[in-house]
Length: 165
Image (cartoon, rainbow, N blue to C red; front, top):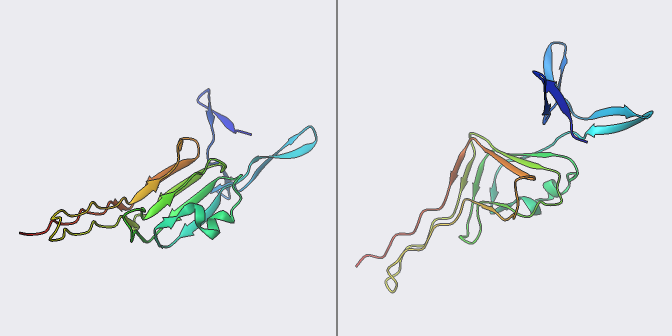
């Protein structure tokens, strides 16, 4: 059930409700409203997951992520070093989340997400290999499910140097 509030005479959607407790604004964890004498949940609350670091980190295969209730919004906080050890995979991989309510990934100011660097050229080919992606988002339509806030560093892997002559 979507929430709305009137601001300056205009109805606006509430994304993160908060309530003032002893003069301090606090985020609401769950919200209920009585409809026809029965309490119904109108705001399911936000679940949170902090990931300290990872190698070829795939959100969809992470056990802690999979243990969350996918019918409720989820905030994922990436806080450390994430890197790839294979050009075929990004340091951060986000696969199909179409059955999830919503997932917001926050990349901390101290976090670094780095793709693998390319291989150097060999005497036979001379050319260096391309660097890998830092982030692979493998979702056809992300607009309603996934959002990312980046306050850290996202760096693709650099290309490998060519062989000298």
